[in-house]
Image (cartoon, rainbow, N blue to C red; front, side, top):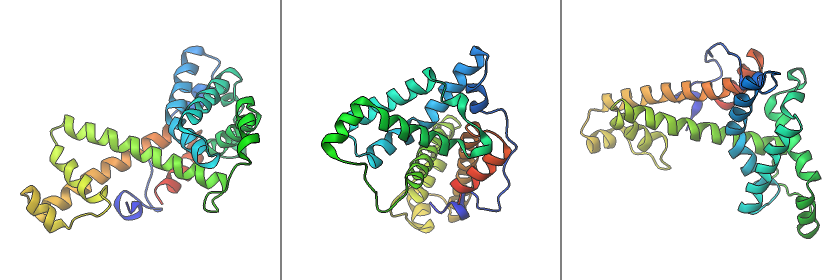
Length: 226
């Protein structure tokens, strides 16, 4: 998907931030802290799991175990509370914590003695790998919610057009989609525009919920929509 032209580019305006899960996860109030922790875990579970599989070359089961172990340690040892927004983004902070956890894991250390050091992936840096998997996860979750929202509102046709054009590896032409779905090319254009607009909103809501403030939100939003 060409995010620059389809769901917003570098010059797009972003909504104001609200109190994020990061702030809640570091709260002294357990009633706020637990939901904040759960929101962060939900947002980062897939990126962490995929990063472990790709960067550290772990099996599916090992990656699942290590992901669970990392987030358990994050809660027990207060990783989230240690984050300082003045020193960088939360995403970078979490990735550094993850690498440290993996390096210190007895189970993982034993495995590494057998399999060797962590690997380079097409020359990508750890930060780039984690950013790529984070972006992928955000869009996947947003698309799932978009589909549910459209179906709930009786707009299944609009989502089907969007899915066939924006999500397909080899999208059909507007004229082909119009003929296939029995609508006009103008309707195809309108369906795509509305779906892209709502997807952009859902993506930004996810980013907004796991950033520490307005500055980080705008930085992460522009990066994910570039």
